[in-house]
Length: 415
Image (cartoon, rainbow, N blue to C red; front, side, top):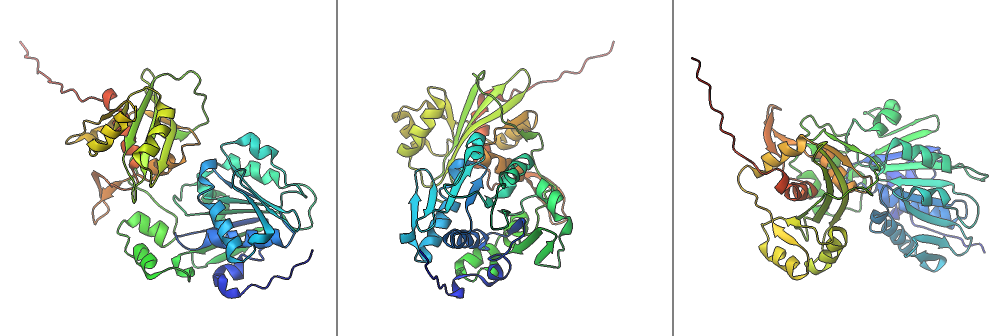
């Protein structure tokens, strides 16, 4: 079956129509600020490539459960906007989208299930395209393994595409690919690598409210990264004592659980950690991080992870703590008090923190949590109270391990 598709160019942002839609470079990077339209434009390209019968896509993020509410939704919206729904079979359970006229597919997978990634194969042909959304969440090893998945006979050039916000200039992606970058340019191409930088100014579909929210950002780091799309530089980062490692939990039995309440603007945040007191090591084993959860929805999720263990919650919402108790979660309010944040931070700074790869939201928070600076750039001993929901939950979880004890020091009298 041959179907002629006529699409109005006005449905695309011009910058992507020029540099992305027909880009055939093996390695492609799309980075920049928030709301720049880069993910949606890649979703548009994905749908058109598969509909035209040339390509099979594998779309990945670091953690499986973040795919459905992000890039999967972007692609289904693109199918709908092109009025192509009748030509695609969308399997939401298995997260597989199949074009009915040519059997080309869009497959989705999280890098937290390595064996599944290795075994994924389209029903017709080979995987020609791998799109890594939020690539800064991924390790160098993961990307190299994905690159090796692009193999086999194909009529088209295979492509590895990465899209992301440039959170930290110390990231391996910067050192690996950005030696060709020129800050005076918006698009750079060298050999089989291309890099396109975009910001909200490249997205003609934003509302005035969207633009105002980005332009009125007062935090210097977030303005630089998410508004201007520049690589982030954190001179005053609070935690440097952490690493990401795929560890085995089979011998763990000393768990700590904490909750920071949230609903609409702020997410509900739950953390599960194992504490090795002898070695002063803290293992971040699990998280729940979601907006819009009612207490009767989040409580079963927490109980599944915590069992009958004590869960220490933000005491600012005593009603929520009471509701959790009624829902048979072993919950209690945190003690908190003056100086508890600073004391908790110092305690956590004294530990070796190991994060499981599935705890992506915790990794995002700990890597960007920083102290305030004065107008001269001097670091102040005051943490910025922003995007620290899981970190707050962790402080509550560890409350009983870091109870402050006043020590009186007496001077010896020399005889």
